[in-house]
Length: 176
Image 1 (cartoon, rainbow, N blue to C red):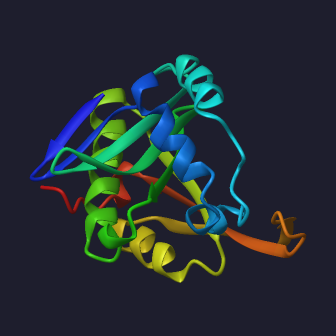
Image 2 (tube, rainbow, N blue to C red; image 1 turned 45 degrees about the horizontal axis):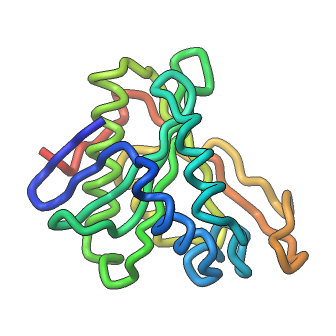
């Protein structure tokens, strides 16, 4: 996959990205929202092995670039029945809260609907991640379920999440 819009690029992650992904995944500040405030403790070799298992039909790890510099990652997973589950993480904090998330998600969602042919996109986010919820809802995602105290982070703290879904008719594209 290679998607470009203005200065933003989404591309397949490769083994050459394993070191930067490992650094991001091991950074507790970056990973805290996903429940890993201590980071994942993974090695570049482990990440490389995971990337080698990627396929367009099952799961794909993606790199996000701004002006050809990696700033984060995205992914999608085929959940069957025309449904894809997506995720995004802008790891360069200086690139957050400037509209990139909405544009990058629009780029990916449009590709998944129009090029691959998915009929539904799903995702979840931490109940405390209000910024992400705002972006998802602006894009047309609908809240499906709130999961109260449904999992524990690395520190053993109970966490809650929100499940979202969207079909093509609900999608508001911010990357036109």
